[in-house]
Length: 167
Image (tube, rainbow, N blue to C red):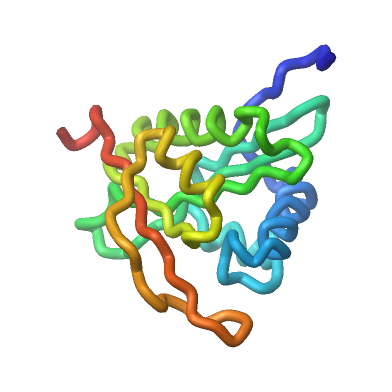
């Protein structure tokens, strides 16, 4: 039995080694990202919004993370962001991902973000289910969007519209 509840808090640069390890697990599955190598902290930091970076901590150890990226530099899209969420293999199936996405939604709305979107491989059924449970809907399939491991990959586009921002 766990003595401490899982805590969700803001990510810090000091969390990067564990965040990177969880990201590497996702890369290894071949169903989480087109990335083939984990970026440096500096590269990752430059590609994600400075706000809405969260980690789930279980027994003092980071077991999941979530962050947002801009979808465009055009100001008209300032309220639209792309979700990244990764849960370590040992923490899956315990509701940690759902709580993390729910907190990410709240944090994004505090920042004025009105649309969250996610690109998910159709093969990643657990991520699709997670997003659907958290209010996302499937908008469509982006067919043959990227090429990896000598095959073309489709990507489902999901989105979640805020019910409080921009209504």
